[in-house]
Length: 449
Ligand SMILES: Cc1ncc(COP(=O)(O)O)c(C=O)c1O
Image (cartoon, rainbow, N blue to C red; front, side, top):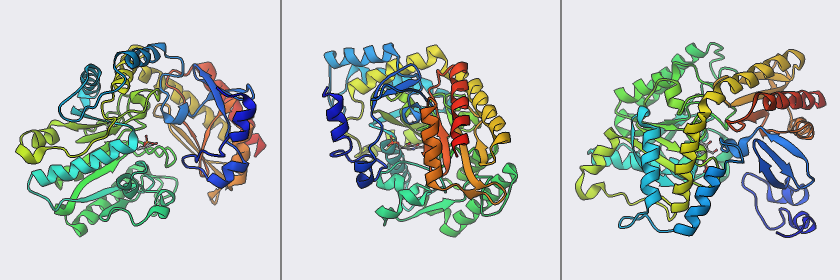
């Protein structure tokens, strides 16, 4: 590796960063993270912080899982790559599909389509949903429903069902036929409804109305995150996903659970849908499937969907896939990661540590009235909405948000900003002491504001 001077001089000079302004980053260079251990990261200045972001909602096992690292290294020597396009496969792909299927058997998932990440998985679900209806003799079912504030990645399909204007506006026109329902966001919603269960009912009524307006026979699928992550950790009422499931069933619409963040234990259960007692028809997954150690995602299907393809004759062929679908090294990472996830029973740590974090932030809110809303309490996903006026709920300006971020980082914790939200999704192996470090650093961050 080149020396520190080289790294500093060339930082963001040639690399365009995802979700960053390429011009701004040339003058305000991103933090160079050099190494990581356990739940902590260390930057180029030797400053170590607890990583309350978990990489990017993904490093569920923390950074020191040697079983996953060894599996990846071994596979590189056995078979670094071979295509899984129809006609050939590899041992790890077979093992990984078995492991993923077992993992989500309780959710009714029985088939696995590997991808290279979350956006790919969403795209796969959307495309296969359309093909499913075509195979069943309903080719007009092409439209998609989703939630405002939802995040489903950046491919054209995912961006089209995304519910945040920022990820859409520069890339329009997007896919036609995508319609967005209000978000189960109790703090701010068009009904000014503060009761989560009543809000869920109101959104269900809007959804029914939209389906009647569009014509149920034109809608392929509804996609939602069981807990909305990037949109600010929006936790729906416990009834919400079940209400949506019921509507989908009554109108022949497939339900896709986007579990890219919520899958693999983050909510305190192995899937977010299971957390709400719902079985989707399809699931998009990524992130925790390899704990971020290798880029892998998977789209999953239940028997209802799979049977239609498998019994369809020639038309059931899937003309979709990626060069790196079922990549042997990725598959080896999946097998090892899922084994470690089960061995460490990470979901059982996510529950109490998530509660500790959530309740700790509630205590901080007694002292800092810039804390407008705290969302979480279901595993290790916590969102803190920062406001400049609590009564008026005025979103905090970005300069102050950045000041909070900087002070928190200097106090020993990396958090993530999503507009005026502080988003936290630490490794699921985080300890009680480390959560206390996060709370102490947030205290300093808020004080700086
Ligand atoms: C719910 C959800 N879906 C899809 C994606 C896209 O995943 P990726 O960035 O791996 O393409 C993300 C990324 O954060 C996500 O949170």
